[in-house]
Figure (cartoon, rainbow, N blue to C red):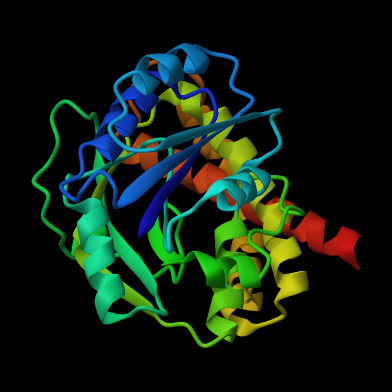
Length: 300
């Protein structure tokens, strides 16, 4: 077995069937790769979707059902079950194109010991996809980003997989990337290993979730820097003196109160466009840096 596509899912039944179909519709031979899915305690129709798709799977398809335990533990369960020489990570809202596995393996032939990053193109829905063409708009500087990345399975096991102490949202893949970098691996971009990321326009009702996620990500950012007291970790998380001072000043002038006033009267289903979208992102950033300061204080 040359490759494993590994993904974790939680309450994404509406997208999961299409994502799995994309995983099975690859141009390489059916004996070349497998799919390993970890169901992280979903409470929606995920189990029904899995059984429906299982009947049509064209490659070996392993499903692991676990209690909701977080992404790091789910990834490790997938790593333990994987049999491919190279493990390819995607998320449950990421749809690979038919040449996806073949492109990762083509890069593996040229760079057998390194990380391969594919291209992630945002799509508002999976029924009307944009052209599968990589451009600067799709660029990500992340060294290891599990929306579309592959690495030799043996190497990942040697470093111990994902750190399960990252129980909240954020940075568990950056931690893996930093450990792989320390081992001397390079991160190679293959712009033809394309996957579409489901990214619908945010709505006013999404703002509280955005803020909760930002606060969780701030707490794990401090956790990341405690493990990796390096400039790369500080830069990735925004945990620098300049950025903290800037956002402290923004909080001091009460920008968040103004942004909240603009957003509070919008209906929950109202799309966040233009200025409203910008305000929502600023509110999330304000929450992130406020929580970052709290987490740093608790740590000391």
